Length: 149
Ligand code: DAT
Ligand code: MG
Image (cartoon, rainbow, N blue to C red; front, side):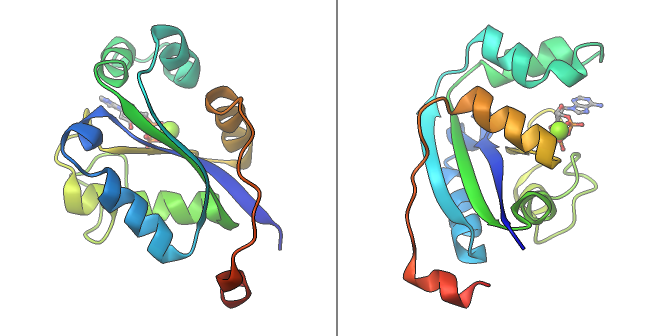
């Protein structure tokens, strides 16, 4: 099976609450490989483009305001089934419904501030990686990869 890449972001609430290391650590321990990471302030233009699929939803303006309110930590992770694995590790969108053991289930309280974003399909991963990382991603081997097949 081919390795997948996924776009993951610690949202402003996660950065403000000091949860960047916790989120990074969970993906590292899972065995996913980090290909890119940056702390950045999001522009309105980038936020609106990222969340374009939600443009008509009643919460769209709040979502854009929230994601641009303070820096985010944007990342690309790679591994077998990385997209669905990361979504499972994040838990359901509403932390009230997210299972214990997931990021949102363990650390989140409300749907408006649910700590983390992760691509939901191969198409959205490709779109989001291109949108957030126009610089080249790291290309490297890990000795441990032979134990993560
Ligand atoms: P996810 O982040 O799990 O992919 P989504 O793509 O449906 O969820 O929505 C994007 C974000 O929008 C979500 O993380 C939080 C916010 N959101 C979704 N549904 C909402 C709602 N009903 N009320 C307020 N915010 C909502
Ligand atoms: Mg989504």
